[in-house]
Length: 162
Image (cartoon, rainbow, N blue to C red):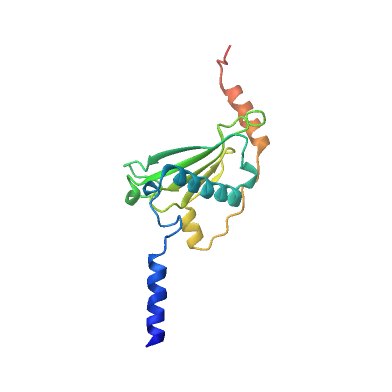
């Protein structure tokens, strides 16, 4: 009997304790706390999947948007679902891409679901990959690819800026 009461007490305590970021709707948090958690998740994601693309020379930007109503790679069940995008700006003295890394985080769970890097590579469906135990290798830094892309764009543009 005492053992059962103790087990129920522990279970009740575990259920009523404040949860961490995962499983918590980010919009219910104060802006400073929400942004801090978004930056933490974004940094962890970049460091796991493309550490060479992490930049701290400028603060990242955070925007909020939603999955379009049209069918996307995330399916109709996600249409209208809110998410945040944390964008780490590229180092313009070294790179020509618009961003170094972009991390997409669901607003209702606080989990990253997509990461893109300035080289054009990235990973989608992060939750599914993690759940299924897929190991995704970090994306290597591709500075030369950026230079190649820049040069090919210049060659393809017959009307360069004067």
